[in-house]
Length: 628
Image (cartoon, rainbow, N blue to C red; front, side, top):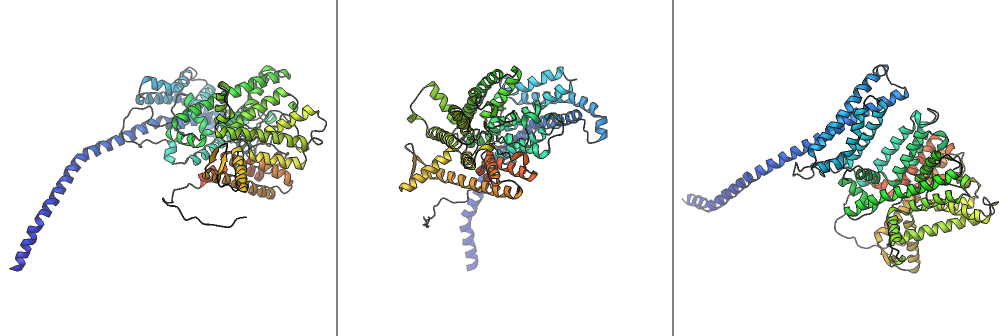
């Protein structure tokens, strides 16, 4: 009886709980019924978005396959080297068929993008280049060479469009965010890895381009390792070369080297964004984030303005230099067309701090020609200051202001660049007054010393044989080369700002001051640590490669190896004559040094070892250690 009563009480007491449980289940069921249509709609839109993205990529994939096939087949026919006889037998037929398919694919690409464009104005702004390529291709479809160049240009434009932001400029065919991915988002590459991969791709492209028979004056005279070395040197704007550029390469090879120099000087990311702007394409979000990190810009608006300024400043300065050098070479006895070509080549090479020259002895023939070496010097200085400083220089010219109102970065760059140039000129002047400069007048000694000091800012030109310098001078200018140019410039080295912070750190330590300040501005501790790490890593890498080169090239003198490695790590390009006599292993090692010197040791380390934030929001207790 008692047990039945207990069961009845338990049943009565549990009834409200069961009722609440039923109510909760009813609420959940109602909520699920409300959410399910939204969820289904969301998933449907995701599917639509993915299908639309795939649909937009199909023309590019087809163009990559068909145009790539046509470019390869035309190149093989031009070279007369087919891997199989059956390909040679049907080569002309394949080229003829493919030449009709390429315009159709470009038309499909234009039509597809028109369907998904916001409006007609947006469509023309983005795809006017494709229309410009398609129209002449239709009229010259029976000309294989013309089709080859047009298809190559359009394929390059399509590859650059991979940097575009997929959702910018298209209809909102999906409200789901983050479902469209470009190539680099799929690869999930960090900014450092993207910079690294971009330089490697350009070097590979340049290597195979220089190996083409029509790139050199004597077909097949350039080995793979020499081509790799020169492509790396040009892309990394160094200037070292195992062969004479002017004598070895024809017009195509020299223009390709100049193209690599321009890419390396401006940087792949900057140049691709510049091309995107010029071709009417939008910059992708991934591209913007990488450029923000490279150019040290805080906002997207400042980033677009900076890229635009870089394009404008580069074109104006290089054009200005080309005009003056063309006049100088014409006055020196060259025909106008040759003088114009020489002027353009050396203007770009100087502004990008590359150091490549088309003359047998660099600029030694123009050591006493102020119009040539003066213009080259000014181009080197402008290229080595950095684009941020150039922008402020333009503001100064338009609206003069006192030095105190300059930004801290500009102050440091100006002072350090001027100081290093003057110190270097005085060092060479007095170090070689009775040596390599003996026999020149006082004014001629000043010209040569000043130019060689300027070119140590990672340019690589020379107006006097460096082999005539004594060991004391060679070691001194090696230290100058290790410092290099300024951040954000076309030059390499550990940068002038790093030296300024290190010198100020030493000064503060000697005076017993904990904080580091420059021009009434405090330098953050993280900046000091980063600059110290950069200097130390650069020393370790350079020292390691010097030891490696001593093992690889045992027959060469230590001073020549030391100078060569320092020149390569600072992307300078000066040499004591060792470069043509390097073994294959030595060329590969120096190529690595040039590559590291251009992308930066910290960028290389960050690309290899992707960092993750593993530390929590806490600080460890301060510990004390003995130093000194």
